[in-house]
Amino acid sequence: MSIYFDHAATTTMLPAARDAWLAATETLGNASSVHGAGQAARRLLEESRERIAVRLDADPIEVVFTSGATEAINLAVKGLWWARAAGRGAVVLPDGEHHASMDAVAWLEAVDGAAVRAVPLDPLGRIRTDAFAAALTGAHGPGSGAAALASALMANNEIGTLQPAAALSAAAAEAGVPLHLDAVGAVGAVPVSFRGLRGDAVGAAGLAALSISGHKLGAPMGIGALVVSRAATLVPLMHGGGQQRSLRSGTQDVAGASALATALEIVDDARETDAARVAALRDRLWRALRAAVPELELLGDPDERLPGNLHLHLPGAAGETMLFLLDRHGISVSTGSACQAGVTEPSHVVTAIGRDARTAAEVLRITLGRSSTDAEVDALVAALPDAYRRAARAR
Ligand code: PLP
Image (cartoon, rainbow, N blue to C red):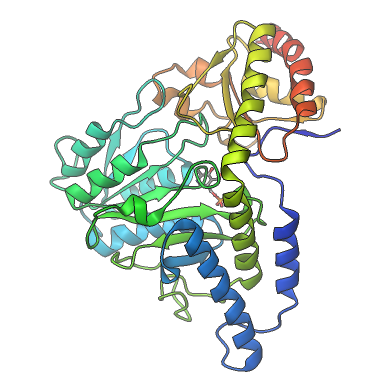
């Protein structure tokens, strides 16, 4: 039996999304062609864009399809930077962000003169709005004056902490700074309204862009989207046929778009019931694991967290060893952090919440999803205590 607790890495494809995907591949035609076949593809594409816009509470023209969230985030971060500040200015980025934004910003720092203003996380992994607002205006940190842009996660993908996205967006609007939100983990777990998050923002300031990823929602890998406010100006990463407001040239993935729209609708319709069920399952898992191994410690915000996220510190046991031992039982979990040449790096998120490097190498990210079952929880509860004792002996 394969037992899967890594839904934050990628989740089960929804049968209806797969059906929509396959059905769309039967449509011959490039959505940019003017003949009937092209127009049929275009209709399906634009219908999908509209369905996604409805669910994210945005205008269809604001939905830009990409190959996934990494591309969407790169487009947002580099696009906003090049439009406003190429060669000078500051980027606000909280600690503990996903590598897609961290590394895009680090690249701008190394290659294009960006000054990076970090915002510390509190011990539960929350971005403090006052510190974020101070970084936006330049009250502290490198670079002078208002930042060129800011980017932040809506929900931390490792420790599951939900961020105060509306307050961050309001702070950005107030400071006149465009903001990108990475909504990859949040969509399907908490309400995400682009219009709502933009609030009273006018023009280019405030929430400018929001990224999502298909394969985290039950759509196939290789499709995602960046919602780009009509008022925002971004320089594109790619140049070519001028598709999608010239923000993302390239023949559009009609089948991926159709599958993404289908998955998003299903996940959004079931959001409240799924979130409650998954959180109850997660809480039962946590109670049972803690009863069996009292040393375990829950990291992240115990209340304001993603419903499927259980992030554990296992004192004295390397997360990597735990991962291998559980894998032998057919149980997939994650350490949450990047793996370079087969070696897991200590989690930069765990050090960002003030813990030492040793602790950062002793963590497991256990993530549940809509296909998680009681039987899977029972199997992990049965396997983890022994794996923990063995891993602790080996360290
Ligand atoms: N942002 C977050 C929070 C993620 O969890 C991921 C996936 O690991 C990404 C961005 C990148 O998404 P994609 O796999 O679609 O490139």
